[in-house]
Structures are given as C-alpha cells and as structure tokens.
Length: 106
Image (cartoon, rainbow, N blue to C red; front, side, top):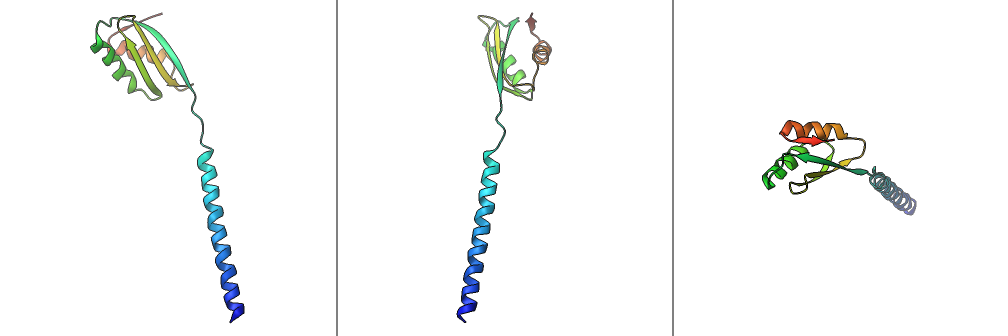
C-alpha cells in the first residue's frame, strides 16, 4: 500500500511540474512579442482653414492601417503623423490627404 501511495505521490508531483513548465513556456512566448517601431512624418498641407479641417484630416488618416496618431494645425499648415515604421509611406499619406481634399506641399 505504501508503494502505491508513493507512486501516486510521485506521479502527482510529475504532472504538477509538467503543467508549471508549460505555463512558464507560454509566459516566455508572451514576453518575446515583437517591439513596434514608429516614425513621425511631417507634411505641410494647404487648404486647412479651421479645426473642422484639422479633424477631417485626422479622421481620414486614422483610418489608414499603420497610422498610430495624427496631429494637424491649420494655423501653421502642418500635419504630423506617427506611423508604424516601414508600414506606411509618406507618398501614401500625401495621396490620402489629397483624396480628402487638401493639398500637400512638397
């Protein structure tokens, strides 16, 4: 009887250790997620005359995949876009702004 209890105890410890190892492996996978790099793109945009224009540009650009943040200022005609590096190109942003109805100055 003692041998059976000992075997059961050892088996239970083994199973417990295995499940802890699997959890640790899962945790290490979660920790090794890829770090996202961002870059800022600044454009001079003409045609913005008010905060409504700023919001139109912000909303139009935020719909693009890879755009994280947008700041627009009609007073200095600047739009600054924080994008995922190597995911969105300057030309794509300029095209989107022009599609919305504003002009990007080169």
